[in-house]
Amino acid sequence: MVRLWDENRGAPLGGIVSFEIEGVHPQDVVDLLRKQRVMVDVPGRTFLGGIEHPRPLIVRASPHYFNLEEEVEMFVKCVSEISKERNVVN
Image (cartoon, rainbow, N blue to C red; front, side, top):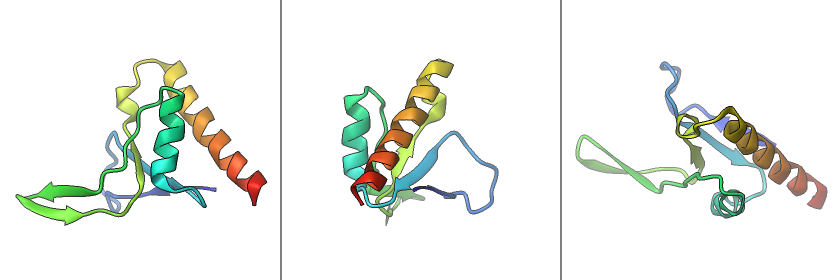
């Protein structure tokens, strides 16, 4: 199962999608996606107002970074495949 995070807490949505795949460590998701040349990240902290804030370990993608519709489709396909593979293992 893929769970989306609403980091904006109801505010207008921006160009970043945060998600996790149940049962798969976020860094493993990053590693698997990068093998498919899909760039995502797991930021561990952020700075707001000059103050460091820890962040939950979740995968973040920037769909606006992908230039072509095919690249967005590849991202969705890869995330779906990782999720399906995890469900087969359980």
